Length: 178
Ligand code: APR
Image 1 (cartoon, helix red, strand yellow):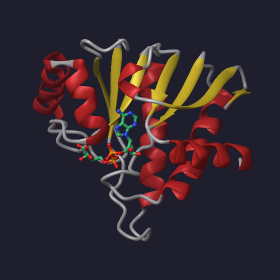
Image 2 (cartoon, protein in one colour; image 1 turned 120 degrees about the horizontal axis):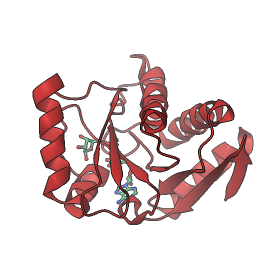
Image 3 (cartoon, helix red, strand yellow; image 1 turned 45 degrees about the horizontal axis):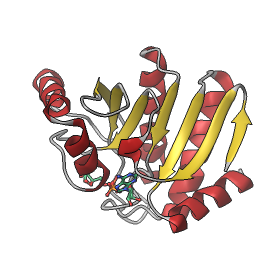
Image 4 (cartoon, protein in one colour; image 1 turned 135 degrees about the vertical axis):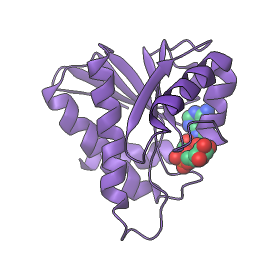
């Protein structure tokens, strides 16, 4: 599914984020920035050691990446030139500010992309795997945050890359409702 918001193409696809040819892909990282499973594991495997090397340099400077913040590294062996590592919230029932932390993760990823002159980027479904954030709620937050940002800031393309047909359907529903 795709639409245009402002002057930006917003599209939803099913696929593997490590295969995307956007200028940047967003990693669903953790605060330690040392890799993990899921998207994090896939991106580090496909990106190669250069990605981890740059994550370690960031750790040396600022310890890691707080939840809701974002940092940027090389894409290493990936098609994408950059990886934007952001940290979504762990779902603990919805009363510990999880919604706004998830919003921040999308917002700060877009902000650092813009500051880096990046005009096309791909997001995974942040926090909806290991971190257990209910996907329908996460999709509504993701779509509204991205739509609001790209209304005012032009990108060529922003893409959501969902790993399963079920997840794609949830995001398509959220886009239709937005
Ligand atoms: N491409 C696109 N989406 C993917 C891929 C992939 N290659 N692999 C997994 N996904 C999907 C999952 O199906 C889920 O819908 O990404 C979504 C996010 O899942 P996680 O990767 O588990 O991310 P998250 O829930 O944010 O948890 C982050 O998991 O891997 C660790 O180090 C990471 O501690 C961090 C935590």
